[in-house]
Length: 242
Image 1 (spheres, one colour):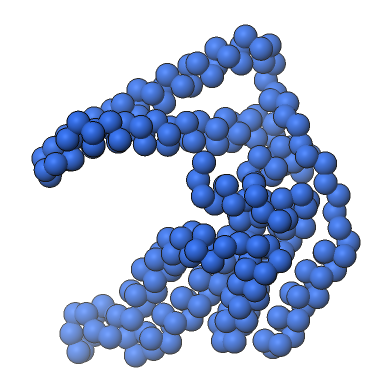
Image 2 (cartoon, helix red, strand yellow; image 1 turned 90 degrees about the vertical axis):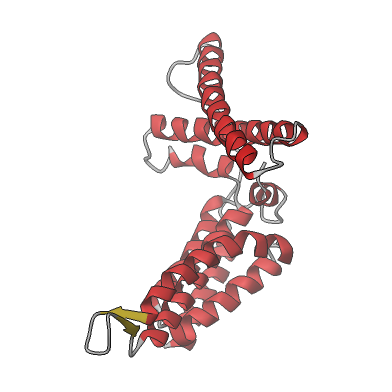
């Protein structure tokens, strides 16, 4: 299991309805995208961090390990805005308003990614997908997503085991050996993916699969107090920013 999935299953808000957490997380993301970067995105990021580290109970180290990957994409996307191609000064030069535009983009995207992580750290996938059928998403689409979610963990475990076996057999001692091991790892993962899919299909057929995967959904009710506090937080951020 990935660390973010383990954190979602052990979250303080694990028993809350996914709709509540979706309104909060994606509401903060929408505010980060729509409000002015300064001070809107900064206020949204601060509020999201306060919720994540406070009521949601996410460990700072877990949050950083999950946030640093999207933050790297945010920085990578902002760097090109510092330069311009063509012009009288040369083929590639610094853009006049490049630092301002790059900073604004970095603020927006980093704050928006925190809003998405708020939902991911508090809501397991297995709580969301079955409820999508009630929201109008076709059942086969949800079933495929559930199966792929399950198989992804099996394949990650298989890749880890193969990697450990290769390291134990000195398959990573040199660059050439590492490339050969990587090729073997890819081939083994490809074969095992088909094997897992075939075994899963056989297992479903043996259990009378009729086109619908029926799973138990933990009971949860929407809290009006939580939604009211969420609305007050979002309205406060908008009011202070504007």
